[in-house]
Image (cartoon, rainbow, N blue to C red; front, side, top):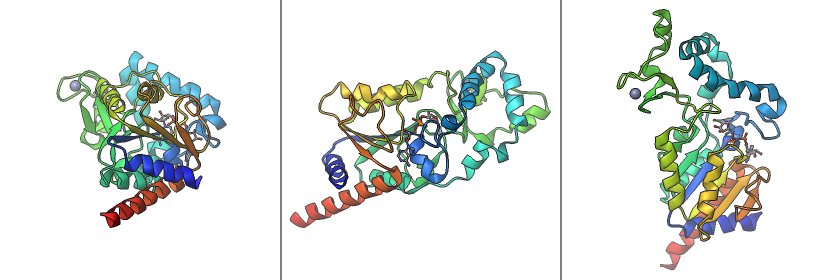
Length: 271
Ligand code: NAD
Ligand code: ZN
């Protein structure tokens, strides 16, 4: 394990354009359950997975009713309410530090929890959106959730919310199952994976497409180094990744960053 941490640190230090791909696994140590890990929401309750797949269809069929139903849910006590109060863990902080060193150029996250931003990372692509934002389904403009008073619109029977810029229908920015990835983040992500020479994949089961295709795009270039940090092997492990460092992101990512700091100090002393 120690040697793999050192290997990852060396690969990152010598990289020109390193990026990280993250999934729900990086946030489990903040107390947010993932979907498919050993304690995942869907591992324990397969019915919840079926329901999740119906949500986008509901929005498409009747956006007014979709919003009315969402606003009548007691969100403060639900999963999402808790999400807003959650804090980053040492894995998120390690990636933020890696960005500050100049090594990590971008994080592409599947998470909607905003924890990378809270941890101090700035170069983030939220591939599946954010629970803190709303998005126009026509022009893809995004708005902070608090800038549109949804409850007021409900009281005035003016749902669904409309985009102040183009009049398009607004939905939550979080990408629902079955919903296409917004075209801007889709294209930006492809640009990033085509550019990177090191990809650090953290805490994702790598089964949700099209996100799970991103490492495959990078793999077309043989020289790209693909490193996985995950509790368990994934479909990428034997075919796409160069190596897997098995364990918790909250423990392994700080170790990798500490090792990088040591390498850099040694390099400075040699100069
Ligand atoms: P997933 O639930 O399918 O898989 C999580 C993976 O992380 C599993 O392989 C698990 O073994 C691993 N893992 C769990 N804890 C870990 C830890 N401490 N360290 C390292 N690995 C760990 O998650 P996914 O691949 O991101 O796909 C789920 C989808 O659901 C995503 O699209 C995401 O948008 C959404 N989701 C988001 C959140 C969030 O925002 N925090 C939470 C749940 C689901
Ligand atoms: Zn719009």
